[in-house]
Image 1: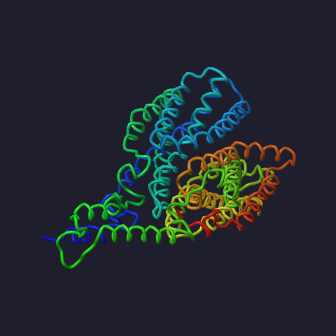
Image 2: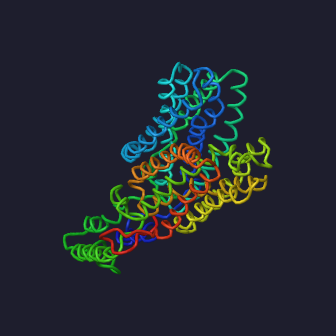
Length: 494
């Protein structure tokens, strides 16, 4: 019969390291089930936020007897209010967890769509718009959840969730919304969209777990094993020690309780000394205030503001730009072709998301990817202002570059914050970034329209607006991985 010492040796060396963590990935990592549910949540958000709204706005304007200008101002006020709501929602998801927050977010979205069917005037329209814009936090909850479940595969997880949401929430939802609105009207369309959230998306959230540790896992599928076996080895040895202080009956190895205690003390001192230079990247985490005391966090935040600003203004005024109004009404791009330019953008968006997800997991620094996003944004504006009259190839290039920009921005930001500042407070940090991004989408179209009125030309206003991404490009060149005080080195990837 082997001695207790040999039994202890047999069960510990290869099973786990000194931290009690075993690198034993499961055949099917539950995190990918989390990703599938997050795809559905993102798709539902896109469904209610933009695609159904896009098809019912003209009918709402006609039913409520509101001008396009009045609708725009109500939407602007509701969007800014929804942007402010992202900040407390970010803090809430860090405390309550993604499962509760995603459920609340989808309930808000479904209720908001149902409420739309009862709208009778401008105040009700504001409340309806606000509930939809506030539920933009679903993206925030998804990013926070995936940042907890993935580290080395975070880029791929975010990419899959974004692509799935594009297919489900943009392609499929747009077709259904158009058909339902034409057949039954916009109110029935919203009833059906709300029902799909209540009876499909929300029940599936039962599969969500806010972080992997509740299932005995670590990010990326590594299994968590209790370290009590290691820490109690000396106690187990001593419990089998006779009165003479000698362990077991083996004549090969003789260990006393005093020697075991001394070895345990020496190991603790060694761990203490080894941990002095740099805290392991997976345990370095920054609070929200600590993160925004660094230059990279502000660079990412300003990027989010400008990206939302430019993206919204070019999308909102795209038909005017490509149909020739930007260049004095001279254009070779037919109206239907100008409306079609979103399609190539969607294709490059999907391709870019896949590539970016792989590059993130390969360790490419987020600022480098965001520089590519800014460059695509700048060139997309140059494409429609460099030559007049505007031609169909110019419109095509504009759409392709916008797709590249969206693909990078939507995938990189959550990974950038989690990589630089850790996952513990990622909800609070992303909440502030979402606020800036949504505020940019609200301000951008109005700002371009104002510049257009002052300068007398949409083309001149576009040329001036390109200054913003150029300035952020310069700013992003200086964004480096931050150092956290007390750890003596640049924080590693988290």
